[in-house]
Length: 111
Image: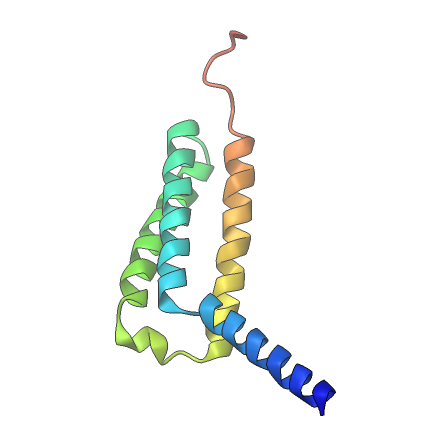
């Protein structure tokens, strides 16, 4: 009986954790974070670089996601689609962080 109760409690906690992860507020927060990272990357990379167009596209897409997550239609998406979207956003965040870390130095002079 105790093992059954523990299993049910663990399943409930996992379900709550997933529901917090796919909540529209968490997507808006993640979109804002990605947009801010893209703005930082935009300041670091020269405009002529190949990453610049990608950075601008990411900014536009995060604006769209922020708007979409505010609408009731977003809640109608299946949990699986929202989980995949969240995983994709997290992967994009990691790639953006790598891009920011590998940005060239603005000057050749060491400080």
